[in-house]
Image 1 (tube, protein in one colour):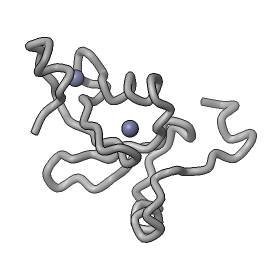
Image 2 (cartoon, rainbow, N blue to C red):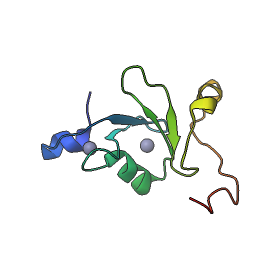
Image 3 (tube, rainbow, N blue to C red):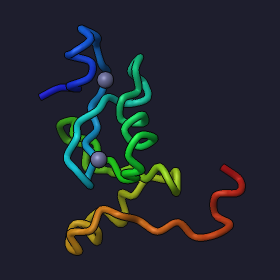
Length: 92
Ligand SMILES: [Zn+2]
Ligand SMILES: [Zn+2]
């Protein structure tokens, strides 16, 4: 398992994130190419989870917040789309 884009380019990644909308795996923002963030920009898929061993948190690019607390709620609903609240993004 790895970042497909990095593997294609012969690049290296630091940590991996998985898109909960389509299952695409990309590398984190500590990695040179930031493919997970690019995937969000390209597709609008907002929720990534860490697939590093022992890590269970999620990240929402729209809310720019960790979704650890709501991860189970989202999983139960089978719905990887979160809902930003108007005004919450202003101070980001
Ligand atoms: Zn990558
Ligand atoms: Zn996706």
